[in-house]
Each structure stands twice: as C-alpha cells, then as structure tokens.
Length: 552
Image (cartoon, rainbow, N blue to C red):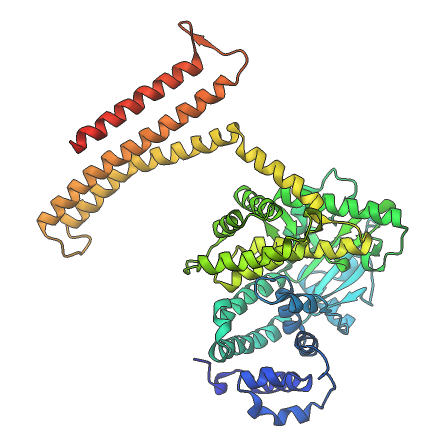
C-alpha cells in the first residue's frame, strides 16, 4: 500500500514535482498514478508546450527541471537497459546536469574547512570561476606550490540534505507505481529506488571515486596511449577531490582528420578490451564528455563514479553468450543467461525460448559482423521482462559496450565492435576449455569435495548431540533420532564415495595430460599415464563391486 500523502516530509516539494510533470505534458502518467486531483498546482508553475514530444523526452525534460536528484536518477536509468526500454535509455543518456555555479566564497569555505588551512597554504593559484558546474559538485582549476595543474572537485553545500528530501518522495512514487501499474512489479520499483539511494550515497563520497581512479591509474601504468589523472590524496576528502588536470579537447568537440579519428578509436577499443578482458575492472560510462583527447592522440579518461567488476566466471559466461549469439544458438543463449541469473523467481522457460526465437528471426538476416551492442541490450531487456535478474556488473558492461558503440560511430561509421570482441571471447573460451584449465578446476573441486566429505559426518554428529542435550528444541522421538543417526552413517558412506569418484576423475584427467607429454616418465618399464589409468580402473572396479554388494 502506498504511503499516505500526509506522511511525506515535504508536501510543497511533492506538489511542485507533480506540477512540473503536468507542465511538460505527462498527463497520462499522472492519470495512471491517480495524481490528477492535484492539477491546480499545474497552473501555478505555468503551461509549456511539450505535448508534441514523446513520453521519454517529456520525462527527461521534467527530470532536468526538478534538479540534481532527478537528473542523477535519470542518469542511473540510462545505464540500466534491463529496467527501461531502449528509447528511454537513449533519451536519459542526453541528461545534462550543467547548472549555475555556487558562490566562490562557499567554495573557499568548504575547501578550507575540509583541509583545515587557508587555500594559499596548499595552492599557488585557485580559480574563482569553475571550469564546470554540475548538480553534485563543481570543478575549479588550481595550481599547486610545485607548479602542477590540478582540478579540484568541490561538493555543493547542503546537497546531501536536499537529496535526502527528494529520495523520500521518490520512494513514495515507487510505491504508487507498484500499486497502480501492475506490469511494474516485475521490475520492483522500490528496489530500483533503493539501488539508486545506495548509488547516490556513493557518489556523494568522493573517496570512492578517488579509489576507482587510483585503481584504473595503476592498471594503465605503462600504457602510453591512455592517461588516468593522478589523485592527490593529501588534498582530497569525502567532499573535495583533487586530481591531476588533463589538458585537451573533449571527444564531443573533436575536429581531427579521419586518420587521427581512427587512431583514437583504436586506442579506445584497446583500452576497453584491456579493462574488461584483462583487468576485470572497467569505466562503465565512457560517454564523449568523459573522454579527453590530449597531445599525440593520447586519451584521457575522467569521472569514475560508475565502475564495474567482472570475475573469471562471469567473463566465461559473457563469452559463451556472445559466441552463442554469433552462432544463433538458442539453447546456449538460454544457458548463458540462466547461468548469470541471480533471482530465485520461477522462470517461464517456454516463453523465454519463444521470445529468443522471435528475436533470432530478426537476426537471421544479419551477418556476424553486423551485430551491434543494441542486440545485447535487447537480450538483457528480454530477460528482465520474464523475471530474470542479471548481475548489475553485467548490465553495466552492456551499457559500456552500447556507449562505446555510439562513440565509435562518431569516429568511424564503418566500425563494428563485434569484430573486436568476438576473437577475444573465443580465445577466452578456448583457454577455459583446455585440459590444463579443466585439470585446475577439477583439482579445486576435489579439495572442496574432500573438505565437505570430511566435515559433514562431524557436523551431523554435533547436531544430533545438541538435539539429545536439548540445545536445539525439536519434537523428535528417540526412535527418530536413531533413524537420523542411521541416515548420518549412510551420508558419511555416500560422501566418501563422492570423494572417491572425484579422485578417480582427477587421476583420469592427470593420466590424459601426461599422455600428451613427449618425454613421458616410466616406472618399472611402464609409462606413467598407463599406470594412472590402471589405478583409476582398479578404484572404479572396487567402487562398482561395493555398490552392487550394498544392493544385494
């Protein structure tokens, strides 16, 4: 049930939000959320002619009018193609949070308050006019005592309190959406707002961005075509962030030759593949405003508020998905998506297969090189529609690929990202499928199974002792306890057999690996591989005999 309107902390702000919605023409949204009764506030804020625009565009305009919280919320949705349709993602990607700067005296008071000393103690020069002003902070150019140019990001005064007020209203809207729009429940609007609350809290802590920047800085050490600004930790706090100033032109303003653009694109692609495939840590929002072109086609990356992490297992899952897409393989597309699913909700596999087949029918006319990032986004949205919840880092990677796809088209209209990513994915799968890699995984699983088999009987006995001493209160008869003891004995035997089976598998794989060695060691005139196969056969035969005896 939605929160009663009188429980809102700021009714005036809520009324203004509704008025802005109506002023840009979002009457249908207000109707569905039962807000038309508050229409009188619409006239207070004036009428605007936005009725010929699309709903995503109207919503983007409303977010811009409503200030920092809503602009940031729209920007979050722009990197979540699993939650909102493609046209909303595209529209919200246009959100700009360029707003008037706050006074220099406030800037000075904040910096001096955070650092504990006057500005002149740290800086030879500190510009009074910011080089950029956004909703959360503004950036000032400064020069350190040693002559180094730096960019000082200063958080807006009282921004945390203002966002907290708006967050309360956003939660209220989420409840209204869940109550009145039935289809919204599968996307869990309140959970989306909760995720946004965590995200905005992180963005308000500049130490987090500093750590992200530092990690990327270390990852790209020695790479001469990428520049990550150095963090000055002694001049940074949760409210101010001092970083190396990167002098250059933003990508969106670039007017170089076609040859230079292709060189820049090559550098961008290589940097992206390094982050994803090698490092597993990537800049999730590399839009043109966050890319600076410096001298000699060196690329500077800035703004590390949104980053993603990918481990080895997820890399393999993503590789499997992309290769299955290239091969138009429904079963493996489904398997790859289901492997990444983190939701416990029941999945309608039949509908999933049908939806994927319909999508593949659209792809059959494409050649492999004509795949785009939007095809991956389509699969992500399709999965969310049937209740599958994919890891946020995978969704961020999808958005990163989509953004880079758009950036690449600015630099080279004939560029296809799939041409670059597919060979890396095939190489990754080949590495993971090698006998050496399989042997390593079997070795790890063998130790896991052995630890489990060793601990399980003891844990069961401890549980039974606690039951007998009354430390665990369950109504079980003594006879039932004896049955449980018998069950524990049987489980111990079963665990031992599982461990033995895993050990036999490991011996067989080891034998197979040794058989590939050119100078194979011999023991008593027998090659080591044959000895291992013989040992595995003996253990396997003994195991079969013991199973047959138990059943007799």
